[in-house]
Amino acid sequence: SPPPQLGMTLLVTAIAAFSLALPVRSDPDMPHLTQAWQAESTGDGLPGAVGKESYIYEECKKTSETCLQAHIFDYGADNCIKIEVDGGFKYPYGAVGSGTYYINCDSVDCCYSGDGTDVPDLKQWDIAQKSGLFTKVKYLGKKDTTELFNNTVKG
Image (cartoon, rainbow, N blue to C red):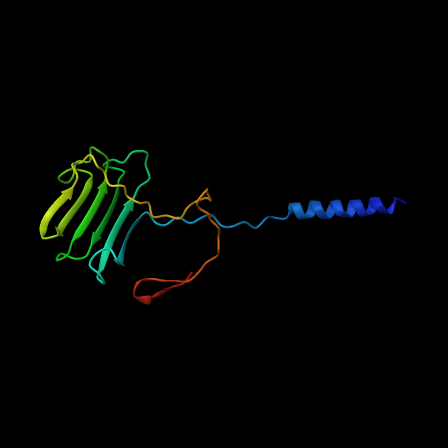
């Protein structure tokens, strides 16, 4: 008959091997925010006014006419409309190509900022895909949230 220590060692080894063979539950893949959207928003136009934001952010090594980034803040025809577009330095549209344009802002019907060499630095609205020195990313599960006008969005 084998010594009792050998039987216990075999049992512990079998339990360890079985537990290592079980699938490990991991967090789901990190979600991305959509990179082209329109939304009602407050806070970027007149105080208390609700406007429409339009946004596109294409990831590319170099922005161009076919891979661009843009953000429009539109608070209506009677209010300032701000358009930021980065289609690269050879973007063929608009007065100066890539840049920041203002329509009906500060009593001026239309104007733009810059001379086409100062491309706007558009922010990529997304969720960090990994933790870093200043960013900690952790899955917290699905949560309800509140959108404009206190409408609940179920998680």
